[in-house]
Length: 391
Ligand SMILES: [Zn+2]
Figure 1 (cartoon, rainbow, N blue to C red):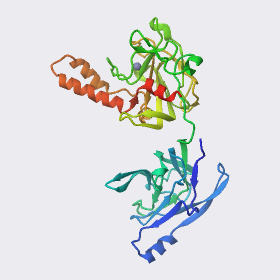
Figure 2: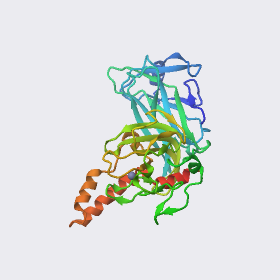
Figure 3: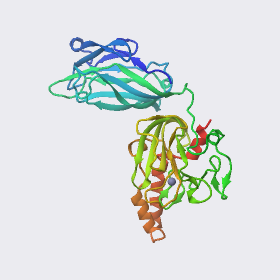
Figure 4: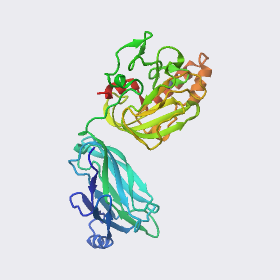
């Protein structure tokens, strides 16, 4: 993991002030006089830097660019700006972040994310403007944070400017993260994946004798399966109480009760290789989810875990209908970060069950297709995922 990249307001290479005066030099000179600054010592950084501030404006007069140094490696970054406790009380400070460039008819277009920050309640904090995958080789504008004096606040208040830092979550020069099966003994999880066998004629063996009784996108009574159901052969109790491990390094974003699931654990992993539905592969953040965990949960929200950390033991769903197994899935959007117990539209699934075999087969197939879309736009095949990332 490389260090954060900082741009301070005295660095003329990467800090640029733009005056939007349409060539009116008197106006530009006046706008330039409105800047004020003060020094701040950052104890974590062991360094003093300048904070700039100025009055907000009802129209666009000034913008400031913080440029990501072009030699920065491609990867996923969290972009942050420092908001001081004083001279910074705009409730509508506007930032625009350029995170992609694309060509249309020979013209280069910027893809920008607009972020509005309420500075009033933020005091002496590095504030996150968002997380972005940035590839500086696409052009000098990639990663640029542009901040405006425009806020429409009347009467004007004060808006502070920077500094800005880009915190690498992973970079492509870094060593790739590795992921293992969530079940199995240590030697089994360390062995090559998958085991390369099937059981009962069709169910793939993951590691040891653990098999997936309900592979990704199987159509069953709860809709299209979002992941895999990991089981040991034998009676339903064969996997009761068996250990569950974090598949990779990450941070726990949820651990606890979740309705009919029983308990679930969700872990965010910053760097993984994901095969998108259109066939492209890219490195990005994913969430792993462990469902039907018993009450002996070993981790808590916010905890950092490593590959192989014991997180819990296999239990039952709250209604105990399905027998002991680990439901395991991989989400490649932010969905499980915000909705840890997400399941594709159960109302449609219930309606489908009611209408199955009824006289409206087109509505039935249409509803199935909608659920399929919801699954593949958020989840990938966990078997394929571990195979691609086991390394
Ligand atoms: Zn399941």
